[in-house]
Structure formats: C-alpha cells, structure tokens
Length: 128
Image 1 (cartoon, one colour):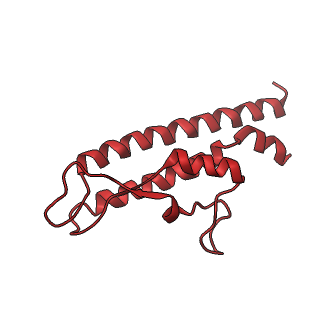
Image 2: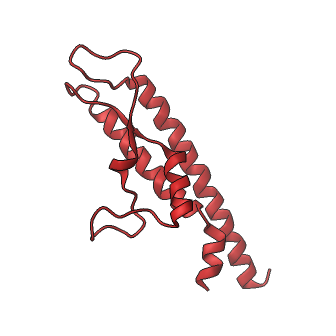
Image 3: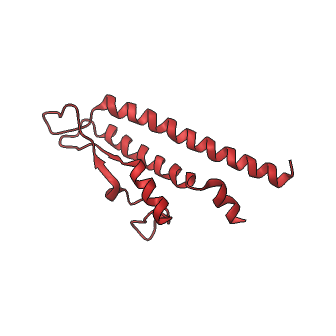
C-alpha cells in the first residue's frame, strides 16, 4: 500500500517540506530587517532537491527531527544585496517580500498537485 503513496507523491512530498522551510528562512530575513549586522539567507531549492533525489532522503540534524528534515544550514546561501545598510544588515525588505510571495505561490502549487494525486487515489479506491 505504501508503494502506491510513494508513487503518487514522489519527490513532491519532499519538495513541499523544502518549500515550507524556505518560507521560514525568508520570513526570518523579514523579521530581522532592522537587526544590525544580520545577513539575509536563502535556500538553494533546486540544489537541495537535486541532492534529495540522488540520496533518496533529506538529512536530519538532530535525532529528534523527522527523518526527512533538511540540513538547512549546509544548504543555505547568503543573499547578495543590492544595497547594504550602514549597520551591515543585508536584508532588502521589498526583495524579501517578493521572494516570500513567489515561494508561497510555489508551495500552493505543489500542495495542489499532491491533493490532485490524493483525489485520484481516492477515486481509484472507490472504483470510480
């Protein structure tokens, strides 16, 4: 039975988790927009997902984490700012808001794809 779900979700389950984590990182950047010396970061989504597809699983950083939790610190990159503030902060709030909006739309698209697959499995189980 689990193979049906693995085939239905494929990499999308891992992509959904990774998209949620990327939104957390971007929201952390937004929250620290006024913190002196804060360096904006992001997750290289394509690179992390490629590594997950090769290895078959995301790395866990702590024994209490879910087995598919991404090792975000090793996959995060610093954002190259257009303008650095005098206090050393590299968060460009308008860029971060735009990135968050795009990331949220990508999260919703991945979620809808998974929901469509679940709907197909339900119909198959009901014999429709």
